[in-house]
Image (cartoon, rainbow, N blue to C red; front, side, top):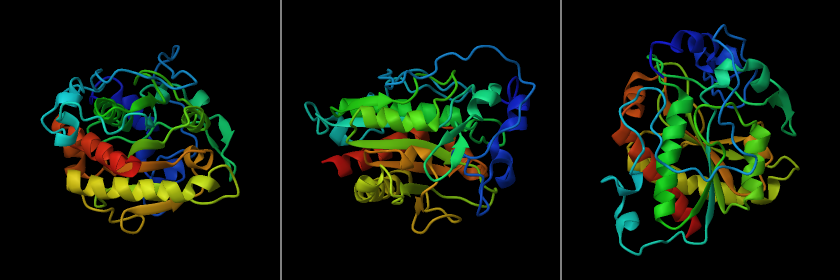
Length: 309
């Protein structure tokens, strides 16, 4: 998000303002299906582009919405793409279904009543969705996750996978965390990944993968598979991006949760990844470079492929 226009309004509502703003613990705002955000005098009007209930098989090609340095167009042909995805006739993921969930949405901050609506995630009631966090200069998590998810979609498709996105663009609201899980379930996905970036204190850095715990609910049968998926993605992400394991949450970049609706309600192997800390200046600078976002997407694709093959 640019520092002009929406930035002032966004600053008033983003969970990235601190742990207390969205119920975070352990020194991080996490912005993951956290508590309600306050209403902001940020304008109103109908939301556009809310995801269809069964997921969006959207093209990977729309640029980042917030004035960053390049769209995701042509991600499958990017020089950073690994040899496996460039080799003619190499489609190792043919027959596999992957659901990619770009965290948050670009207009969530304009519609607090909608995203603050409570939904049941089995272990508690939580807000339908949240705004996410942002860098110090206003590049939003929603824009980052949308851009990376488009790039990831292009790479996975080039390797033969069928890919469903949980939202169709970055100019809508939601969908709710319950719907995001349902999209993966209906697709009978072989793997699902929710793409995020964290918003902790500036000294904290590094990425971590969030995996489900058993809760006596629908996720229980896939907890083991989700762990295997998480390990594959963690290892590929570390190799591909060079980012460190999180210095402030989890152990060896692994965190197990029972309070996230996107995991609790999933009947398919699913993980969340926090790609780093948008409040950390070094990581924020990386996230705003198109070439690095391509590395992030490629690393995620490699992790998914390692799990699926």
